[in-house]
Image 1 (spheres, rainbow, N blue to C red):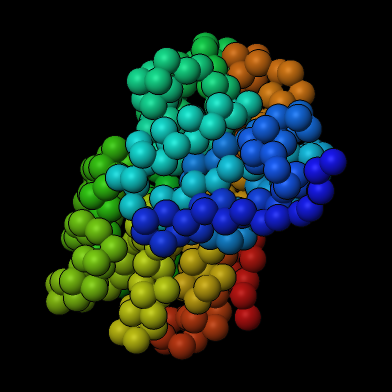
Image 2 (image 1 turned 180 degrees about the vertical axis):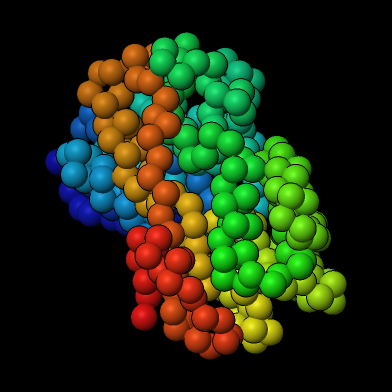
Length: 342
């Protein structure tokens, strides 16, 4: 007779990121994989940056609400790239090799890494992706009836539209501003360059100069922030990208020290001390994505699940941060806010 016990498995990438934390039941004397197969647990593979705990928690809690509890009623294998999206292909192949029942991939770069990995390994595992726009990025070929094995959720349909809203928001906060810096994540040019073009067009109509500053990696953020300040801009726009998420504490701290107004692409920045954020709630997208994963595990085919473009945008204003850097938030902005942090 084999003795049964509970163990916790933790796998760490070379970059030092925890990529799998799953409590599982196993049997002494039996290989772990054989024990899992014997129990018939569905296997969910996850590839994401893993940089925001509240997002990750939202996904896992939603899985639990659907009856898939990691280590009890499902096996959840997680790989986190951190801010290093270049590790995507390697991590994707690790997950594909586990032969999961469904793969959940977040950001277009990592989703494409899984798609390409499946092609190389001649696999067609069902996938749920969350990207800026799965169709325009070429991850999914149709909105209503995705062909093949992939469906997903969109974050923003037009990359430049959101950042243009940030520019308008900053103009309401600082009516006299003449120059705005826009940080470009060079690891995500498919998003950054269309946004840069849209911003420059909108700024020209408003009589504002856009100073685009390229950031070539997490180690380059301090140089970029210094260059940004040296160019004497009145405000900054920081989009939502894995690199800027990985360095958000440094960016927020720099903004506070230099009394620099910054508009951010997601509410986590405002919650952690940023001045103002505008964008959709990523936590909510993660929750919805977990629901789609559950549908597939219950037998639904990705081709029968339309891509979800229903996005609700949220404006979060941090009054404490505004006071600290000497910015008065006008009533016209406050009445638009979905949440005011006092």
